[in-house]
Image 1 (cartoon, rainbow, N blue to C red):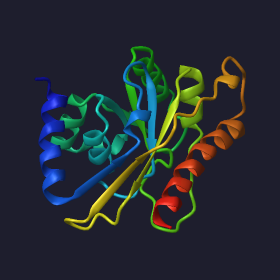
Image 2 (spheres, rainbow, N blue to C red):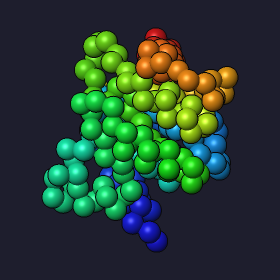
Image 3 (cartoon, rainbow, N blue to C red):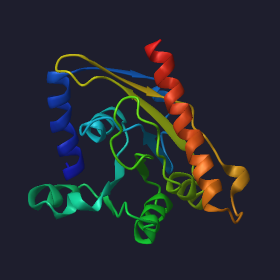
Length: 197
C-alpha cells in the first residue's frame, strides 16, 4: 500500500466518523486519463473531502506556505502536492501541473486560490483555464455544500466535465483565461444554488 492510499483510508475513517457524506454524479469522474477536478473552497477539510470521495488518486496544487510547516510539509510532499506561489503567475507550478497531466494524473485545483467566506464574491484565478487548455484536458467541476458542523451532512456534487477544446493551440490573453475560469466557477455556484434551494 502506497502512502497516498494509506493516508486516504485513514482520513476516510475520520470523515465517516464525524460527518455524513453524500455524493452525487460520481460517474462524471473519468475512470482513466488526465483531467482537472476543481471545487469551491470553504473549509480547510475541502481537500480531504474531495480526496476521500473521488475514487482516483489526485495531485493537488497547494499554497507554498504549507510546505514550510515542518510535519505538514513532509506529509504533503509525500502526497505529491504541487506548491503554488499565490502572489503572481507561478510558472514553476504551471509547469509541474502540466507534467502531472501529461503523465495521466488527476489534478485537483481550487480556482479561487484560497477559502472563500459565505456570500463573498468569487476571485477566480486564470490559471485553471490556462492549465486545462495547455494540458488539453477536461475540467470536472465539483461543488461542496456544507456548514462543516460535526455529524452534519456534507454534500459533494460532481458536475459534467467541461472542455475548452476549441481553444487548444490558440494564443489567449490573461483576460480570456480569466473569463473561461470564471465560467467554470459559475457552474459550481449554480450547482450549489440548486442544491440549497
